[in-house]
Image (cartoon, rainbow, N blue to C red; front, top):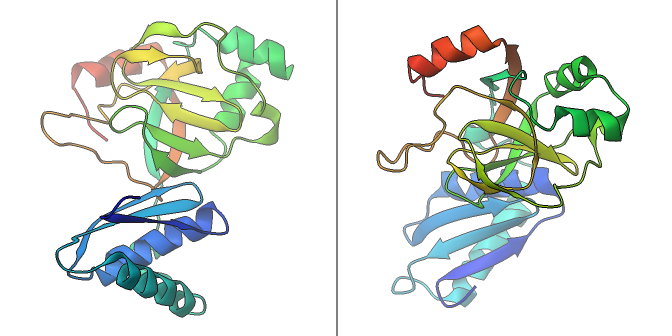
Length: 219
């Protein structure tokens, strides 16, 4: 990745999250940033302090040393972040139901039944790509024509993933609900969700959505 970063490929998503945490916890003096995304981890370094070959050597040793050691401190107690969602605000629920053969209550029950892991942040600042959906919800394709604007807090799904639009942007995922929580504030530098975090959705009604939205609650 140029002269100031190395891209490491791991065996799977869980291993990438673990490896990123190991590098962060070690925090060598030359480290500038660690960016995991699914099965890969970008490691950014100060090129004035170390060269690429030495970074690769250090990272390779870290992978070997981490194999049989305890979990990094940042992974010891991954408590789920609870995100309330109003599934009444779901313009694409009929489309999801038609594709899966499920009722809307079935879709909601499945979407709130498991803990999701954030495997990547991208697309727009703070957008969490989370996996993986229960098998019954997998395989719903993106919209044929993306919306020109998706409201912040909108919760969508496509393929095997679910995610939250943190900012008003165009988007083509199937929208099945909306959270009243503020999950990104670019001006304030507020980005509470990170790769490796665990998220669980909980169902709220429209009245509770309006109450929490009015209070500008944050995650």
